[in-house]
Image (cartoon, rainbow, N blue to C red; front, side):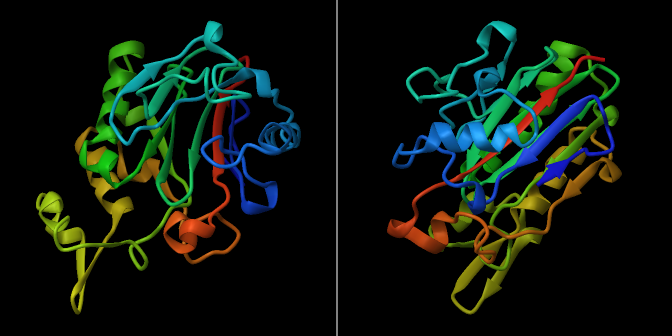
Length: 242
């Protein structure tokens, strides 16, 4: 799956189960070869990947060319403590692993800048989307109105249930809570959209992929498969030379 396909300056792609497990958080067998095969299809080199440990927080990394290879072929070298990254350096592949959490991709054409973020529900509540926009403004002097955002496949409201004891943490977003009998469903993409527009991103610059990782068996899903889950998807974004 590819995004921003009309723009020749970037490549942005998201894997499916057909590409195999691309995450080092699951049994490592074939991960490197699967990543190489996935990237080869879009003419990219695994050694340019920059990856993070994704601890469900809101810290954002400023990545550069000297970071290429961190987390590319093992998890021992990835950046610890970050869930998002931004860069203006060509050929750096910002990579995130997901299997229900929300993958976010950012692009500011005016500043030739990109970003990628992993947003689990904890990261959503910690406002990682806003931290990403703040990083564009801080490091690249971006105008939020110029930033385009892709919300890629994730678990959607129909299948994202939370326990009642977790509900108070979403008190800021009552309009995105849906009660079904004794259960509560949360619309993470709408919360993220609200956060992004509050941060200055134009609503027309936010694209939400409607695919649900839980409902669609073409994707890995932690909530659906539980102990039987054996992988995760990889989402990437990279800049090409202008």
